[in-house]
Image (cartoon, rainbow, N blue to C red):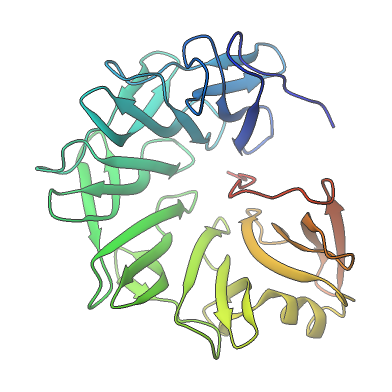
Amino acid sequence: MVGQGDLPGGQSGSNALGVSADGSVVVGRGHSTASGLGLLTEAFRWTSATGMVGLGDIPGGNFNSEAYAAPGSGATVVGVGSRTTSSLTEAFRWTPAGGMVGLGSMPGGSNYSAAFDASADGNLVVGFSSNGQFSQAATWSLATGWLGLGVLPGHGSSRARAVSSDGQVIVGWSTGSGEIQAFRWTLTTGMLAQGDLPGGETASFAFDLSDDGSVIVGFGVSDSGGEATIWDPMNGMRSLRTVLSTEYGLNVNGWSLTQAYGISGDGRVITGYGVNPSGQTEAWVAVIPEPNTLILLILGVAGFQYSCNRKKRR
């Protein structure tokens, strides 16, 4: 394990929020001279050769930016920045040649948007955008600009959280009518609800997916409370803890797997956080090297919150 340091100036503190497919590029947020003191941060891109380099902010912003993903080779970075004309966030796309470029929003949206992921080639960005009436899951490309993906029936807003390597499958969640439901979107099917765990309130989130979009991980609520979930077309949404225990024979006694935030391209590595047998919050990684074996590796320090950071695999 190697610390990545912090940006020059500002108060100490940095968070890694995304990594390229080969692990050579890491992106996130840190405090810098430009971002100043307090809660403001500046997006960064890190490599072993350059160290941590601040990416600045959208022109006109107040240096409050965060980088969430560096898909594929890590040449393209996406995230959110700010503008002085509004306290709302605006999605950005960064490239070595063009620097940080704000992506605006759908017509009438007052530049309220966010970018959470992109296809492996960096050309299709996913997140959300406002159209002036409500915000919805959306995609952005140079050719089309923002295109809304809509919401589930009866809902009023949605968020796209991740996209498959080829840009064909998008996952996230839709909110409305007192419920939150995870969704899976393709051009053929449109937005389809993934359902929820049995019992409990209707609340589910899709955070990440395998390269081909066939396995999705996230969070759901059952009659015993919130827990990490796994979804596939054949079985639908299930408790990840139950799947690891019953299908792979893993001893997870004493563990509560709270949320699953990331999955590798081949679907064999799942990351998240939970509560260990000692009652402390701890990050975990479930590794499935072969169909009939599974190993649970515990990462991090007791009390560490695995905050919404996903290991990218594209």
